[in-house]
Length: 71
Image (cartoon, rainbow, N blue to C red; front, side):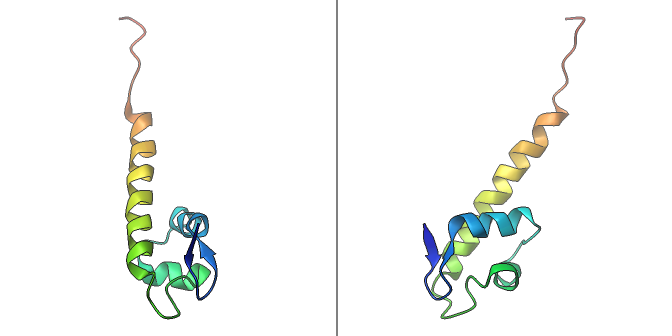
């Protein structure tokens, strides 16, 4: 879905920016221009980044699980 109408940036592009290291609305603005126009989408960009961080945390936590073959 289009999140930033000023620069026609989708939620997928914002998530991609998050995976590429964006941790703030400013980072996203520098990477894909979302939230750098009128700023009306800044709150949504922030929410998407928060969701993306949670998803990354969940994925990163999985390798910590250990399988014990002796059990």
